[in-house]
Amino acid sequence: MLKVENMAFSYRRNEYLLHKVNFEITPGGVYGLLGKNGSGKSTLLYLMTGLMYPQIGSVTIEGIPSRKRTPELLSNIYLLPEEFDLPEVSIDVYVKNNAMFYPRFSREQFDNYMQIFELPAVKKLSQYSMGQKKKFIVSFALATNVPLLFMDEPTNGMDIPSKSQFRKVIALGMSDERSIIISTHQVRDLESMIDRVLLLHDNTMILNESVVDIARKLEFIRTTSKDDLQGCIYSTFTPEGFVGVRPNLDDVDTAVDLETLFNSVVANPQAIKQLFV
Amino acid sequence: MENQIFSLKRFGSYIGKYFSEYRSLQLQFFVLTGIFTAIMCLTGGVISFYGVITPAMFIFALVSASRMSSMFSLRANKIKFLLTPVSTLEKLLAMVFHLYVVVPLMFVVSLFVAQYAAMFITALFTLSWPHFQWPYAGIEVDASYLGLYALSYMGSSAFYLMGATIFTRHTFLKTTALALVLSFVFGGLMSVAIGMHAFSVGAFTNFENFNTVNDAGGNFVIVMSVIVTILYLGVAYLRISEMEVNETKK
Image 1 (cartoon, rainbow over the protein chains, first blue to last red):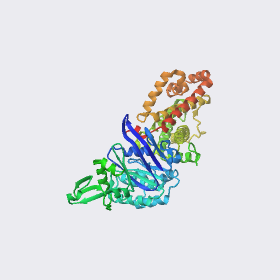
Image 2 (image 1 turned 90 degrees about the vertical axis):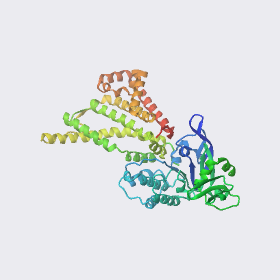
Image 3 (image 1 turned 120 degrees about the vertical axis):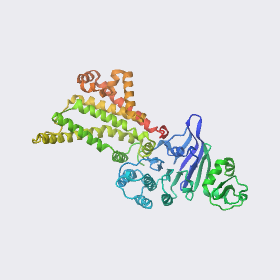
C-alpha cells in the first residue's frame, strides 16, 4: 500500500535527518512510530503524506508518488497533525463540508465515536476545549475510513478516561483494509493496540517488526532480583524493581514492553539490529 | 475515476467548504455596506465610481489576496490546505473565484443595500419621505474605461495572490514592495500592462492617462495584461503544487 524506498531527507545540506529508510505499510494493522525527540517522526509522517519531498529515494502510495497529492490519493489518506485548527462552524456543517471528499465516510460511525468520547453537542466547534477538539477530529478521521490514517501524537491533550476511549475507538475503527500509523511518545497509552513497531534511531529506521516477532525474539523481564537480569542486552532500575530485555532463547512468552524495548534500542542498537537481521 | 486535474463536482464542493469556513466574509460585507451607507448619507446618495468605489475595491481585493497567505503561514493551516482532497488547480481557482467573482459581487450587493439604507437614514434625519431612485442611480460610470479597469483589477489581484504564495509573513507589504521594484525595473509600459499603476490614486483619477493608454497601447496592452495575469496565476499554481510544510517554522 505505502512503500518507502531508500529514502533520505535533510533540512540542512549533507546533514541527513533520515537516511536509507526502507519500509512498507501493508493493509491491516496499527503501526507505532516511535523515536526520540527530533528523531524525525513527524517529518516521516509528512514525507509519507506528500507534505515534504525526500531528497533521495521515493515514497509511493499504491504506486503513485505521495508528493503528487492528487485528489484520488488524498482521498485515501488522512493525517491528524499534532496541532490543528478547526473552523468556527457547527459539527454538522464541518461534516457536510469535509465528508464529501472521503467516499467511504460513515456518519453512523462518526456519531458512534462521538458518543464513545462523550462529546457534547455544541453550536460551534470553537466551543470545544482542546482535548474535546482532539477527540472530535479523531472521530472524524476514523469515520473517513481511509485506507491510510496517520496520527501525530493523538493522545496529547487527552485526559486519562479519554485515553481509554481512544483505544476503544481505534479498536472499533480498525479493519483488514486499513492501516493506522501512530507517531507517539506516549507508548504506554498505545501499548495494547500496536501490531507493528517502527522505531527511528540514528537517522534511520532501526526496527520494523511486528509485536509478535518482537515477543518471539525478545524476553522482557520484570523482577525484584538483580540476579534475574543475566544475559540482558539492556536493563534498568525502576521504582517497581528491575526491568530488562534479553534474547528469547528459551521461547518464553512475555508481553512486549514498548518503553523497555525503546530504551534498549537506544542503549544498545547493535545488539537489537543483530537479533532482527 | 474522476478527472484528477479538474472536476466540476469536486470544485463545487470545495467552493462550498471554502466560503462556509471563511470566517470574516459576512463581517467584511457589513463593514463595507456601513462605509458606503455613510458616504452616501453625506453625499446625498451620490458616489464616485472611479474616485471611491474602484480604489476601495482594489485595496479590498489586494488585502483579501494577501490574507490568503494565512492558509500557508501556519503549519496546521498549511497541512489542512495541502491535504484537502482536491487538485491544486481547484484550490487556486477557488481563490481566483473569491477575488474575481465574490469580491466584485460583494461590492455590487453592498452598494445596492447602502443606497437604500442611506435613503431611509437620510429620510429619518430630515423627517421627509424617502426619495426612491433606481438601483445604483447615484453611481456614475463611464463604460469606456471598464474594460481597462477590469484587466487592471484582475492583474493586480493575481499579482497579490501570487505574492501570498511566495511571502507567508507581512504579505501585503512585501508584495507591494515587489510590485514597486518590478514597476521600476520594467518601466511605465509594463506597469500599465500588469495593471500595477492602477493601484496608485493618480491612475484612478487621471482619465486622460487612461485614454492615452487606450490610444497608444491598444490591443497590445490588453494582450499583455492577459498574458501577465496568466503568468502570475501560473507562478501561484506552481508555488502551491510544490509547497512543503518545512518552509514554515511554526
